[in-house]
Length: 137
Image 1: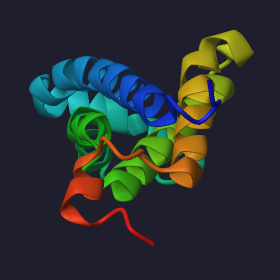
Image 2: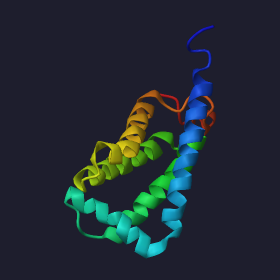
Image 3: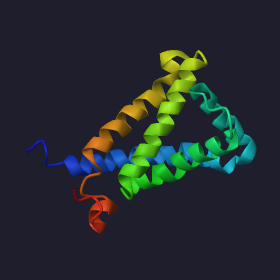
């Protein structure tokens, strides 16, 4: 059996599983409204951006919810993956700067590693981008 034989199936499982989990993480944040978004967006202050916390929080919730969905189905895959990677970089920074340590930041770090790798690897042939011709280089 070739090591590449099940590559696309493995990528599909990874996309659907991780993307679905990000939808599950993001939806409560998105549904939480402005108060939730402001609290979430306050993490941007750790990057020196202490303005518009409600906007940044809303964008993080959108990124996790709809970015997770797009990641799962493989549509607009690289832009969605880049948004998710950016969100995980902010989350990692926030956890490390608030004293949560490496274990507190581990979820964001691990997800960020996967998103960085997936930006390079691509979504595989079982993705909407591939079916619609967007995945071709």
